[in-house]
Amino acid sequence: SQQGEEDPQALSIQEGENATMNCSYKTSINNLQWYRQNSGRGLVHLILIRSNEREKHSGRLRVTLDTSKKSSSLLITASRAADTASYFCATDRDDKIIFGKGTRLHILP
Amino acid sequence: DAGVIQSPRHEVTEMGQEVTLRCKPISGHNSLFWYRQTMMRGLELLIYFNNNVPIDDSGMPEDRFSAKMPNASFSTLKIQPSEPRDSAVYFCASSFPGNTIYFGEGSWLTVV
Image 1 (tube, rainbow over the protein chains, first blue to last red):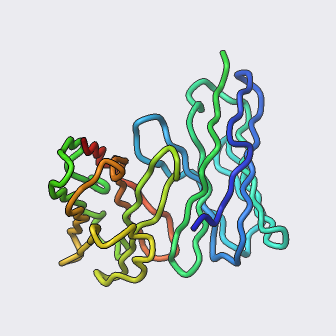
Image 2 (tube, rainbow over the protein chains, first blue to last red):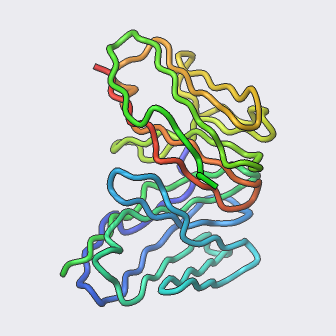
């Protein structure tokens, strides 16, 4: 069963612009994680935010978590061509980690 | 650490044949997950283990699928008999409970 749902499903932006992806989920969680997947590869962990945290930064990445709205956002600032990939949110509830269907991000040169 | 290691990376097999996918988790991790990824269904959790014990196998599609974890450093996912609709990428991942999960590079299965 799907827990997290990302939107938009696909996003194309110009290099240098910021990209924002959102994730909504249905039930209470222990933490939420964001992953990136390049075509033909496995998923790479980007950032983990726990249920008692509201915001986290890692380099050009900023993640927010609003447990009252059951939503999270991933912001990539100053996008680069190498950011082209699919991005997934994953919710952890009692160690069961469920992924959404992802947002396909395409950075235009 | 070498990360999560999966084999085979690619397999093409005929319908009806048995398929065995293998996974070596990161040393010390005590949670192991098997996922299946397709265009239609996205990334589905098939089964996960804690300390070698299956905790939730509700995602296993049907009786043709089985998974084992005989020890902390090895797990298998078996499909018998395989069908064309089983064609997908199968990922193994491991973690400490409640922490970042690390993925292998996947096993690309094609059943013809």
